[in-house]
Length: 204
Image (cartoon, rainbow, N blue to C red; front, side):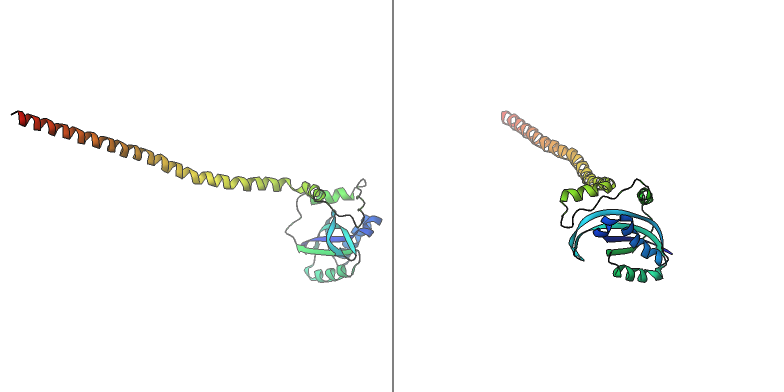
């Protein structure tokens, strides 16, 4: 038995009538072919990028289940023939993500209710999509902040050797400037000595 993650796009007309019935359509196909459902929950309700089976909106169901790899082809065939499941995607999974079990249990509680999907012609605004995605962005924001800080730290690390090199060059520049200043002074003293000697020889 392998662990799989399935995303199922369900017809909103069925969802409006009974969410559990719509949900059970997908999970029932899995269980029919020997799969064991670990978690199943409503993921989101969205407008579609293009029309599917004359529908412009749909509700997504996220499921984690264990199944025999040999039965996946049969499961796919039944999903494709089902009218409630408009689209599906099944992938192998290494494990159930953290928090999925809690969300699954919360949906099974008696006080859980699914919001009624809007009319099929309604199109989601960018703000609504952003609000729906806020719940899962805290870790992403932290990772983005780290990613933004990393180049700055690298830049500082690159600047440090340059500053050290400048610090090393400064004494050398001072020494050369001192040597250049001393050289004319020595030349001036030598010329004054020569002039003194010439005067003394002339007086003699």
